Amino acid sequence: MTRPTGKEVFFDKNELIVSKTNLKGQITYANDIFVDIAGYTMDEVIGKPHNMIRHPHMPRCIFKMLWDTLQSGSELFAYVMNMTKNGNHYWVLAHVTPSFDTNNNIIGYHSTRRVPNPKIIQGNIIPLYNDLKKIEDAPSSKKDGLENSEEKLLGIMKEKNTEYDEFISSLSRL
Image (cartoon, rainbow, N blue to C red; front, side, top):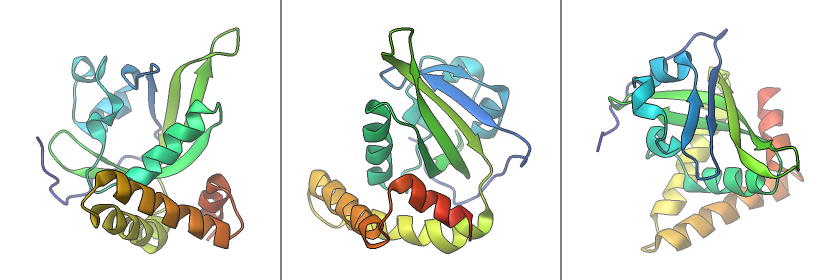
């Protein structure tokens, strides 16, 4: 397994990373920017689990919230740190939506990612995600860690009297 290098890589602010997955999270489409920034070939990503680019320092509670939201039929915005094939990382502001068939059944997921504001990443997201990850890693049980970090995130949102999307949006206005 590839280990994180700690080196951040960037894509142009005018570029969008786009991918689509089936219901199991396997990539069915990726644009050239996706494969370029992630360091894979198209053949290496199509049919593979989208979590192949998941960075191990990302709190799992963010992905749990993402999947819970998508499976309910709603869209979500989230800040995500992804990992490249060689272990470098890159930050994105992801807009993830379910894809529907003509009978309104969810048939997959679509994600468009853009360059996030670096001040928000440094000042808000990294400290928050570090706290959540520390909470997740503390208990001996991964399940307990996930529940504890999710509880912490929900507590922050409750304290601010906001839903996750509103919380993310409020950070974008800083």
